[in-house]
Amino acid sequence: MQLRVTLAALLFSSFQASAQTGEGVLARCGASSGHAYFLKHPALNPDGPNWEKDGMAEGKIVLVRLGQEWDIQFDDALGAYGYRQDGAEVVKLMETDGFLTVGAFHPNYADLYTFDFLNREVVWTTNRQGVLAPKAGVFRATCE
Image (cartoon, rainbow, N blue to C red):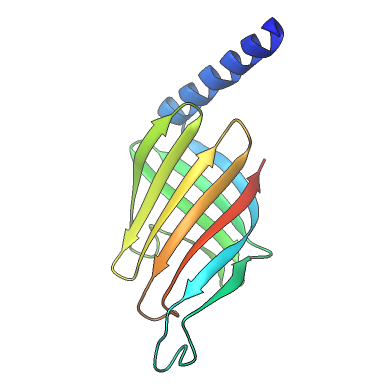
């Protein structure tokens, strides 16, 4: 039992050091799965609203920090891109007990990512309007 507590404390302290002072890639996560609520839209979803399985089956999510700047980069069906490249503001919102929450805000969307470094996963939510089908969704992916 004491070994588990010591190991957990070491993992937590190494997470805090890497998230607070680390630079470069902080997390690499794989495909996301979840559900989305697609809002009724005259052209994009005239039969809506409706819940559907959704996600990025072949996608990748990469959390990056360079100095005080944060970004989340992707590789999915649309190609490789990042929030900052899309003109979004990316900010660290919270950091506690092995969790880090980062938000990406753009006139067409607001996305929140909570990285769980102890269990190596990310849970993220999206609220989208504009060019893409208006939707709200929640997803999960496993991280390296």
